[in-house]
Length: 195
Image 1 (cartoon, rainbow, N blue to C red):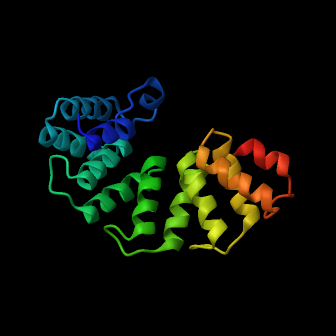
Image 2 (cartoon, one colour; image 1 turned 90 degrees about the horizontal axis):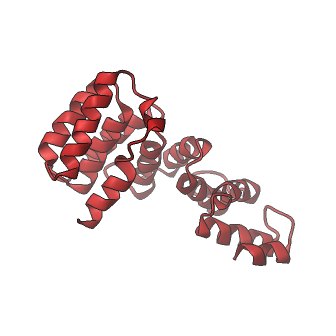
């Protein structure tokens, strides 16, 4: 199985009862699951069609999956602008992984004009829903003053959120803030415990 398929399966495929409660109708869930099964068996064109049908019924995970397929060029010609369109549709419905991917697109100028302010906004929305990668990236933006005013206290806040979820990069960056006393009280013991 290829790297991008594994990535897709990891981020777009989780099927659990937790997710089932978020569907607007049983039919969109059934269509989405059929799409997942098609993708898992390598039938990308069929999976794309099923995801489109589910997305038309308002399924935010299906819209995200379409974005992933365009982003990675799985079963369709790779098209980052089209990926942005589908990520935005899903992100506007509150799906945190789509919000994160959309932030990445704006941060890197991939399929859309680079805009750190918009990236920070999408990271914040995903971070507030507990997505540790978004929390970390938002912390970086506050740490460096990219797209937001530099604010070490705010950076520490978001690093802590991600570090509490055992995210090693966030733990390291938070440790650096404790070591230097920026945004938090200087505490070498705390810094060492985070490295």
